[in-house]
Length: 516
Length: 46
Image (tube, rainbow over all chains, first blue to last red):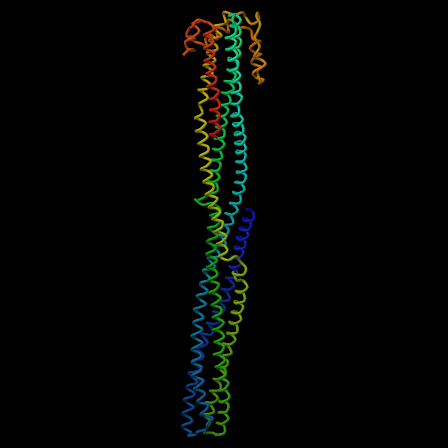
């Protein structure tokens, strides 16, 4: 159990640390993406400069064609310049269009990823601050409750000790019936002996004395047996009630235990698990967003590479035109004054080529910056990947499922145990309330004692006091129990019934005493 | 019952004592069996 707690606490700590780190990462990623966005927006703006260049190139191309026609020259150097200007215009227009389209796509992709990051930030901040912290608190509460319950159960174990001891007492009291039976057997033997005496003895006085002495002792033995028997049964009833009470207190304690470990209908462990399951879902979402971010970054890198290629193509054509334009300037100089206009046009075309190259240089620098940021993001994403460093959503689910299964089994066993305890307690109480057969037993014993007392009262006036005659002590040797001998001695040492005692005894017999 | 008739006033003589004591012995035999029953019942229920 301790291991489970520590494991769960460790997972919660790790998740918390992960989410806190993730929040910082999200902020960094967001800043980097915003930088990329800035660069791409700049590139998108700079595309309009290409449009201007294209416009100027086309005008210059038309002017060059007009001038060639005016001069009526078919010099291939000038024609090549016009053709290349047309080609450059088309390529710049086409590539700039591509760049613009891709840049816009990248802007929308990055904006979407940024929105995802914003949502992820809010979710992870919530998880870190609320869910995980409260899961840790719930776990701590459960741990405390578990320790309390452990002490509680140890206390309950004390109750079970008391139950064991009381059951032991009941078993001892039950064995008491052997003693009772033995005593009654001895009393029976004494009366059988008396029957023999009655058969054999001729002399009335002597016989009366024997009957009196034996009856007096046996009445005392029977009273003692009845008392002890009554006490034993009473003891059994009391002990059974104590056992029922102990079971009741276990039931009440375990009820408390059940209530204490629940809040809002859930156990603390269930509450920890439901929080962990929320986290497990969040982890799944996190992985999705992470994958999406990765995809966006890869897309950015791919697009940047593509843009760089377009830019390079523009740059290459620019270089080519620059050389052709230079060639045209030289040729225009050879033509003399007539070709001065063509020279000016070729120079303008050369300047525009240089301008286009400068423009591509500026975009290339920005693209290099974007590429560096994207590569950095890719690296940081790979390093902080959730899959590598943390428990997975699936593993977390396995753990929570296992905990919930154990919890539910414990709950089932607990309820079943409580039902059993309650049934035992009720059963014992019912049974002890039904123990009354001993009353019938005691009633018969007291009835026999009453018969014996009737004989005693009847004989008493006809015999001498015990101090003035010999006592028939034949029974003494037959006793096997100390209590029997003590009662016997008590009776023979007793003086004959005094007048006062006689009066009390008479009262006990009610109407019957009138006869004697 | 012989015992009851004795208690209610038969003259005191040995024959009457004999029958009363015989009656007592029968009762003792009866309850000795019952003692065992009482405790066996408790034991079984436990």
